[in-house]
Length: 244
Image (cartoon, rainbow, N blue to C red; front, side, top):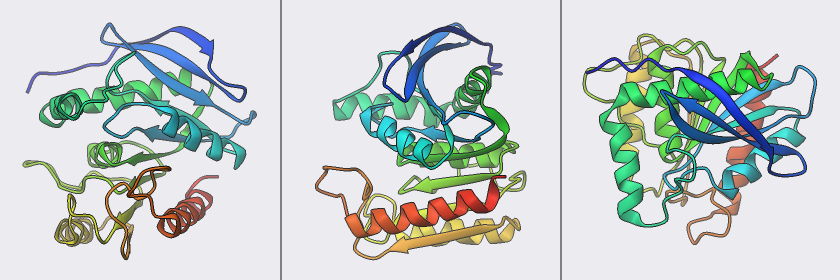
């Protein structure tokens, strides 16, 4: 696979909300638009990775929830500035491109981390978390050996690509999964548990009974309030445990 070395520069930042701002940055010359919010000071960082519809109001809302808890948040953009697919075939196209080009996926994740650092975020004291496609991307980051304090997946993809493993993972992994998820099954859940155990990776994996895929997405038919509340509480505890 071809090398994909990322070159990052912040080119513009504009106000997007009272407590945060959009940040346009480049990766290998292409523009991406993330979202940064911070309570100020030397707050620990959460790198937030979006679902397969791109960085939307949902991720912004979660980012602001975290900012109110005392964390700086950079919601990374893996699709490109202005690319927020709404049609199923477009979502599959954009995620499929990154699933088949893992070096590009890693470069974009690292690009988001670099953009966060350029905003003043403390990337030496950071956790990565993601939803659905974003959860799969966070596990890609974990396997890459990224020097973060933890990796968290909410109802994310759990399969490991051929030729990869968790031998380079340097921090704890938290998996928050819906036991009724038919897209990512409990067999996938168990397989990942075995892999993490095999490689001695500190991990915790929780399956919420009756929760389908995307159980945390507000306003959707698959939203499950109880599973959302419990998983967010466990995530909050995890952040307190691993971030200074």
